[in-house]
Image (cartoon, rainbow, N blue to C red):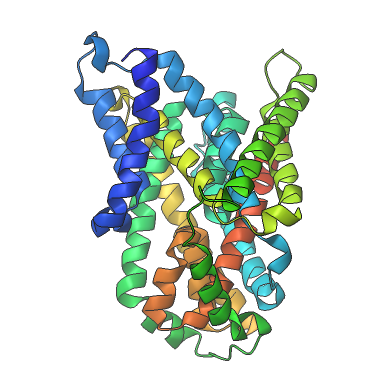
Length: 396
């Protein structure tokens, strides 16, 4: 493709997939991101080279993959009304889940790091550890942001995203078929008396009502445009700061990502942003564009699948190990099974799966708890992932 057709491809295909997910439920179940990865890989690997208009322009594709996440972070964080959160029980549940993930992620790094590793191998696996931390404390937006901040190669990133789909998919199957029985049997205390759950149904109903309006009708159009304008401003300030703190003339990605996150959290407290319901969806669309661009840039035929299997084992170890630790912490802290299950799903599978967990538990009052845990993870995921990366480099 020439640049114009590449731009159309990257912007229109995610829009079409999202629209089709509203009509075809199977897309929503497997997630639009999975479909976009498949489309991108098909374009990258099935279309012959030098095929004129059907070939993606590499420079344009790289540009979009580089700018999509820096735009997504502020949009998604500004779509959250931080001041309305009810921390209470969510903080206890979140900290137990977060601690479990961090302990297992760091322990797994030293377990699966090859004994004969070179400095480059050590650095590469530290990048994997950083991105894994972002995935299982936050979600896909953190994953892409940390990937850029630590300079992870596209192929390694594709390994992680592909294997993540496998292990999280298997975990979701376990949750769907056995989750309710296992979690409630091992953690039978179902006493949910915290304020966060008493008002959750009303809050959820209000949220559902707020999602209906058309963002292109005043005054929602003004707040949507304001969110976009703030995002561009935040991205510009962060980019300039990243250039000013650079040592080699290229943007300092660590400064860029952390400043994006911090400024966006601050902007979420602005009065107009507290009423903004569509910023998160716009940010998610940017993530979809990023997913398509990354997949389109990867030629699977050049990958050493067997050589990347330690990443698969490592991600599986994180999920299983963190779940076991979370059960132990829950026993000590007397956290009920419903809360642990929804927290686990929010961290491992991301907040969009929280309503599924609540439906499986037949407990609508758990939704706000799960969403709060997931959003706390979104906020801290970038800091933790990048921080662990630099800690491991210092130790190495």
